[in-house]
Amino acid sequence: MPSMTDEAQQNEAIVSVRDLRLRFGEREILHGISFDVRRYETLVILGGSGSGKSTLLRALVSLEKPSAGEIWVKGKNIAQVSGAEMDEIRKKLGMSFQGGALFGSLTVGENVALPLREHTKLEDLTIQIIVRLKLEQVGLAGFEDYMPSQLSGGMKKRAAVARAMAMDPEMLFFDEPSAGLDPIIAAGIDNLILKLKKAFRISIVVVTHELASAFLIADRVLLLDKGDIVALGTREELRENTHPRVRQFLNRIAEPEVFEELDYLQMLTEKHRPRRR
Amino acid sequence: MPVLGLGGISAPSLLCIRRDTCGLVAEEAVEVTVRVGRATLDSLAYLGGLARLGGRAAYFTFVAPWQGRRLRLDRAAHQAMVVGLQALPILSLITFFIGVILALQSAYELRKFGALHYVSGAVAISMTRELGPLMTAIVVIGRSGSAFAAEIGTMKVTEELDALETMALNPVQFLVTPKFLAMVVMLPCLTTWADLMGILGGALFGVAKAGFTFTSYLRSSLDALYLRDISTGLIKSLMFGMTITAVGCHEGFSTGAGAEEVGRSTTAAVVMSIFLVIAVDLIFTALFYFTGAH
Image (cartoon, rainbow over all chains, first blue to last red; front, side):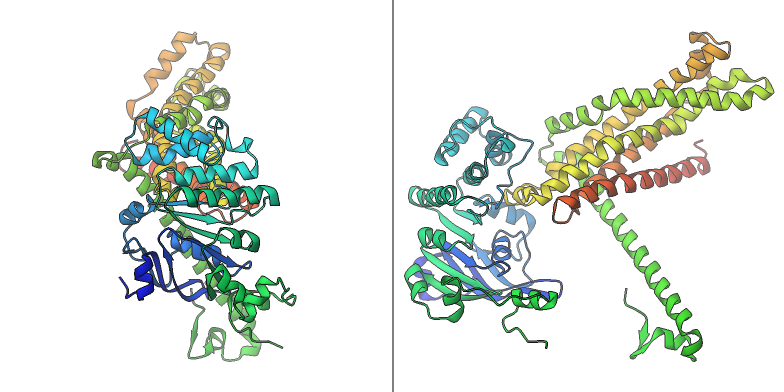
């Protein structure tokens, strides 16, 4: 394990990211970032489009391999573990994808039951009871036999949360939980996250660009900008932060428009944008 | 592949001292070489990808169950129904027609020698050795190879493949293995059926125009066949099954972002499968010929 600060030890980090770099081809998306996710906290990763927040989340669940740096999850550096070890870690993680990512060929109930069927030796009846419980927890009681295509966007996300919760994970990851939903449904998803947080002792990492949602559900907020952390702290700390990018993001001030392809890519991923002309 | 060059001097100027006269030709020659090289490397990488996927599917089908990993027989059975049983009507019709066509085409030549009664043998041998396995493969490519690519491609676009991984489920084991098992079992079965339907198609002509009775036509067909005619056809169909699964699934996995990409990989799966099935056919036919299994 890397040496941790006293505070982190006090708060017991369940995930420690150290100097994480991630590049796609020539372009570096994450420029060496470090932070901890503490046990039982809700950390919201906030950032604009293309800030690298989704890539960061994918790296945390090992869907992307870091180019350099370390990601410690439950005492193991997932940048270097074997496939079998990673699978063991993954059984303790739940991930809810942007579009739900429910399996279209399976019913909602079968979707939730899938990890239980594959990873446990539970009786079918027991699995059915767990599925009903999990669906009740997300407000979808009685929807076991529906196909994902019959559900609305918000219901799909709820079903995806139920599936992510199936194995009673220690950590839950949400990728843009309110994307593509109307404000009322999105608020419902926020409430669901708050409810899960209260009901279960569980660490939650949420990636979003919705300010209102972030300030509602977060214990701490991490503001990511062009692959770097510009702010990390409680909601209050973030509100008082005077960093120009934080102010710009919180006050919703538009970027100057860019029409050149190269300028656009640089704007997304690089700290200091050199003016070409 | 890096573009040829030495110490900052570009390849065309090395090839050509008087650049103004032959520079253009040399530049084009280099460009063609680079393109051929790149295409060759890409093709080899593609074949490597297919072999790796096929190998992993074979491992999860034949080896992993002995090491305590679950083989999803229920999913394989479901796939077998889709790949096999549901293909029967269209396959029967096509191979029956092929049988009639074969009989007509061979009768055209045999009639000149007064050897019309050899039609039964010609049809039986052509069907079992070549057209039975090949036509079955073509039908299965159209029905299932494309569907594999579309299914896995859509799952990639909607992040379902990522979801599988985050649930600690291996996408190859979960998605490809049942298809692989179904194809490896069903293709030889379908091929046997196709052989039979082709022979029945030949019988239609034999009974109507070549003076056979139905039973005498069948007996004459069986007399003309050796076991190795059937077995080489079945071995080929097994290889076709593996090829179609590997190409369909590989194209699905290599789908890019967006719905139009699914269409692209589906088309690519069909075109590439047809090409590779014909190539595998050629290799095995040559192999059987030269090793004396003909």
